Length: 334
Figure 1 (cartoon, rainbow, N blue to C red):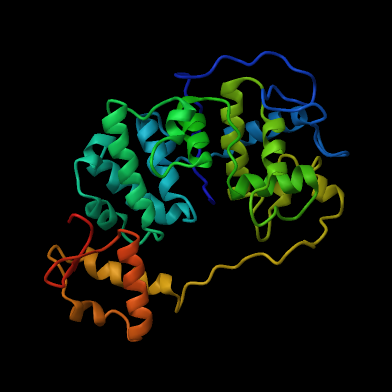
Figure 2: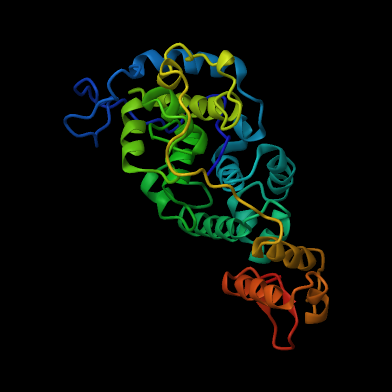
């Protein structure tokens, strides 16, 4: 996910006790193995923590999910919405979502179709169904409160390793490695000396992220937030602002002369003319109608009948659209 969400401060409530000291290089990680260390010539974790966190203290954006009143549910909603979606698009949808459904039980009481409708044009609408499923599970299993335990978070529908770590860290001040695209890029440049991280997260990246974690939980949560913000605002994929970076003098990539990327080509997502675009147009028709929609109305949304049918069948398979016995279509349960 390319998520830029992270709280401006890590809440004290729910913080885990500080781990026991371990040999240098393990950075307090109970899962580290002997021989773990940062790459030769890279800056030490302790040299990075202070400048990055201090930079964050002065430069963190004021975002609604970072405010204390957002709570764990606000953090979770933001994490779902920010996956592959920029902050500017998320803000209005997030604020309306939280006004309408301030607690998981409020969302769980609605139909999944209402979640899809409220998702609007954020894209990847299956996230709306997953968030609705997570809300229902929270209401049923946890008394309506987002659980603090990492394993319980992982057990929620639609919650993977990244989201569980992000909620535990950002909402509850716990010590977890939170690896989104922004953080991975910061670590690739500052520590491994590469312009870009691999296309997919690797075990080596996860190990490095654990080694870089500060030992004290609240500081680790702050570090997770700070590295994410640094990647979003300064260490960007295109045209990084290295002159504004608090660790530019320590950065392995800069010290190597900022070499060009030599790995596999970077993936560039396209949208125009794809099945994703067709799915979006079909869903837009259904979102705008409070009544079931006949096939003829959907046919007007896209000219190519083969691609339109393929996209519609995909929406039906994904549970984002329901076909009624009379042949009309609607959002699920709407």
